[in-house]
Length: 108
Image (cartoon, rainbow, N blue to C red):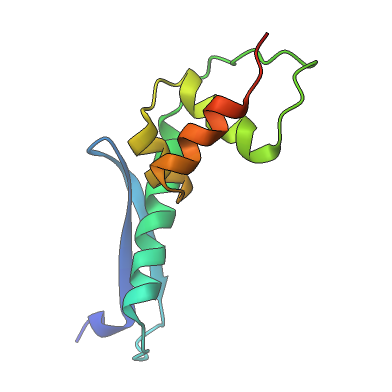
């Protein structure tokens, strides 16, 4: 009656706060999806939730610092007080890679 087999909802969440959801609607038509596609949808929802949960406060980064794009991402998450494990999860790196990025940044 409602053709619910044609809709997938993906929550947009961060720290158990729900900001909304992503909706994929095939207008009553059935469609195939894989476990990988559902996992990707979950990751997108988590990253959007992280983005929406950020404070309006700007973090000052010294313009003279020479950081790669990935180092900049790690530095921003450090400024938001994320631990290595959470940063690794959000950026889809290992904790060892996160540790290496932090170690390689020269703040002197």
